[in-house]
Image 1 (cartoon, helix red, strand yellow):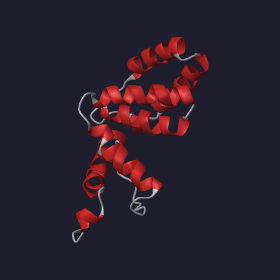
Image 2 (cartoon, helix red, strand yellow):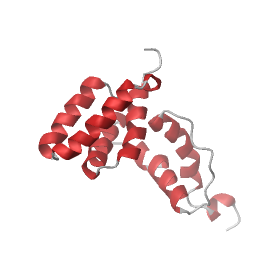
Image 3 (cartoon, one colour):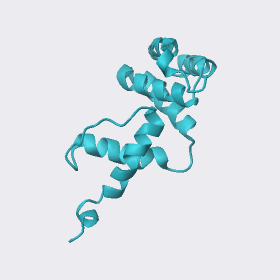
Image 4 (spheres, helix red, strand yellow):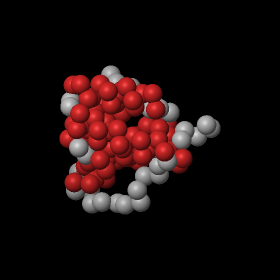
Amino acid sequence: MNSESNDDPYAALRARATGAWEKVMQTPAPAMEPSPGSYPDLSNTVLLGDIWQRPGLTLRERRLITLTLLAAYGRTEPMEYHLRGGLRSGDLDAETLEALVLQIAFYGGWPSSSTLYLAAQTALADPSNAKEGN
């Protein structure tokens, strides 16, 4: 294998991941360069360079699914990133989040919905999470 792309099977995905991070999270991509093949590298490269860009679900649908699972598992830190990204992009708003919290309450349990409710209230109260142009 002589070319760099042949040596690194994830090179093309890695190149797409930075732009995807900025689209999904609505913030500049972190200025870190993990070792190729490391956990942080593969997490961002495969997740954002591939999974978040596949056809079949819209970005909004992916956000709702992700927030549902994060609420179910009580994962508040990544929940904050996804709430911020969804609010800034306009994919999510207070009405959508209220409906999601209620849906999770009955299908996933009140503790899970409470976790999302509190995180959503914090995200909604932060003016830096407003969609640009609003």
